[in-house]
Image 1 (cartoon, one colour):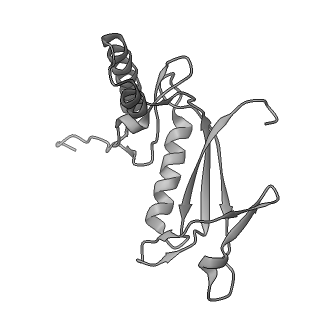
Image 2 (cartoon, one colour):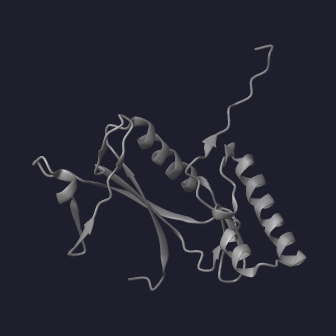
Image 3 (cartoon, one colour):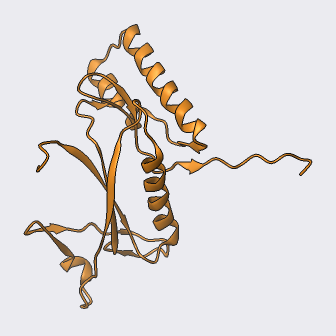
Length: 174
C-alpha cells in the first residue's frame, strides 16, 4: 500500500467473445465513475488485463496468471456460447473499502436490529437511490447484500453490475 490505504477491488472475468458480458462490465465502470455521493461506494479507478490461454489442448488445467511474482489460478466459467474456459479479459474496479459488513451480514449477526438502525439504513438507501435516479440510472439490484456499512456506520449502496441507464422519455406528440 503506497498510500497506506486499503481498497476493495472487484474483478470481472469475461470471455473476449462475449459481447454482452463485456458491455455489462463496461457499463458498470461507466456508471460508477459518474457517481459521487456519500451513500454510494466510492469509485477510484479501473483497469483491464488480458489473458492468453496456453496453446495446448489442456488450457484450463494450465491456466495461470502471474501477479506480483506469484501464480494465481484463473477460474473457469461459462461463456455466452455455452462453453467453459478460462477468462480472456479481466476488468478490475478499485473502490472504497466498506470494512464493517453488508447489511445482510449485519442483520444476520445482530439477530435484533433497533429502530434507529432501520431509520439510518432507510435514509441512506433512499438518499443514494434519489441521487442515482437523478442521474438517469436504475440500480436494478438493491438487496441487503449490496448495501454496505462503513467502519463509522455510514450506509453505502454498492454493486452496480446490473445497473442500466434509464430510457429517455419522449412525448407522444413528437
